[in-house]
Amino acid sequence: MTSTLTRTYEVRTHGCAMNVHDSERLSGLLEGAGFLAVEDGEDADVIVFNTCAVRENADNKLYGNLGQLLPRKQANPNLQIAVGGCLAQKDKANIIKKAPWVDVVFGTHNIGSLPALLERARHNAEAQVEILESLETFPSDLPTKRDSAYSALVSISVGCNNSCTFCIVPSLRGKERDRRPGEILAEIEALVADGVIEVMLLGQNVNTYGVEFGDKGAFAKLLRAVGQIKGLERVRFTSPHPAAFTDDVIEAMAETANVMPQLHMPLQSGSDKVLKDMRRSYRSEKYLGIIERVRKAIPDAALSTDIIVGFPGETEEDFQATMNVVSSARFAICYIYQYSKRPGTPAATLPDQISKEVVQERFERLIALTNEVAWNENKLQIGKSVEVLVANDGRKDDATGRLTGRAKDSRLVHFSLPAGMKRPRPGDLVTVTVTDAGPYHLLADPDSADEVIVRRTIGGDAFERVNEETETKRKSLSLTPRK
Ligand code: SF4
Image (cartoon, rainbow, N blue to C red; front, side):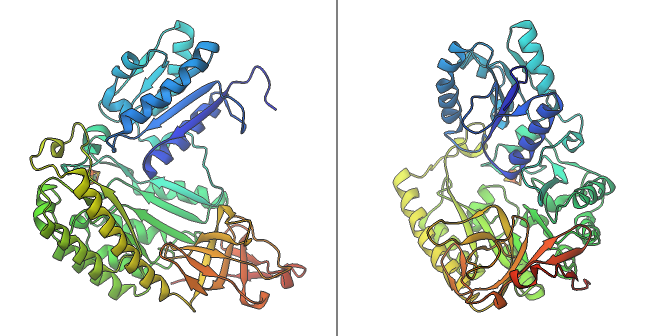
């Protein structure tokens, strides 16, 4: 129960990992200012929308959500509504014009101002709009309330120096700003000391890290340095840009034991003509060359990508080129997006916009192909032993009792436990053998407890083996030595 004097908050997040991480900071800031997270089923006193401007109908969704809150605001004038994120950066004061019951609008460069803006709006009984055009402080300096105790998002850069014609990010997030390596490493060390065993390094263009301080090899060096942090089991990163992908990064991935055998690298299109129109400065041959070198250096790597279908001017031949790259690259996961006009982007004004029917038909064909490719790739995992990091919401399904988590290569694994075996906790590492596969997941249904190993982090690089049969012995195991 919360006291009647304590105000509660709720952050509603839309969009990418960057926004998820910004929302963790918004929560940290609000808690630092004395607010408490609202309990399930209760109405919050402050509702914050952390918005995304990437989708065409993002505006409609936001204004729809704000409209639904109007009766609540009329019934309770003490309710405060704040809108931040990329849509706020784009629409600025127009948000207040369209939804005058909103109390605060803040942008992507000043999330740290939220508590002060809420207070000022309340004190002055007047809506507050504050949008900065560039970043003043790197947001990682702000307090953070993380969603997971064992897995953390860590920003290494924000902003982007590219100008892909379909993307609104550069105009909303600004030029790339890089954090200093020492600061990043200190943050990760502190996280590990707190029990985190997995980090995701985040950047709009994660592999151009270092461009601001003039070190082209900085990202590979950072991966190797993060690899030295004791107790950190898993390092991932998202998203690299193919144009900037260099072999030193592949070498660092292959030679750093805790950098996971996984690469998510957006393709967007397999057609060189479309890539040119998208102002993506690599071509399909370069993309496939990177994939080939990654597979050679890290044979068990799982590859995933983002693809846009129906970019203006995309012909059937261009689309076939994308299908060909998908077949050659053998992606384990493809995130496919139907092109839709994003206001404010150069592509929105290009001629030859493709009809919705054609986009839908190509989308379905590509989904069918990517499912087939992914399923074939997943079937190759049957019989292999995988180590699964049990997810926060680790219960998969009540009917089968299976739990869920991610393997080292980031594949989703649903696994069952033999009768009588103690259930692992979120953040435990469970080793099981894959017994079946679907297009989007692997299954592991072991017959006996002997086939399952459960490790639980107890800080540093020490783990306890907590299989049911060894539970009473509480036997400490040390990790396999790393390179
Ligand atoms: S690289 Fe392109 S798609 Fe990615 S954030 Fe920059 S402009 Fe957008």
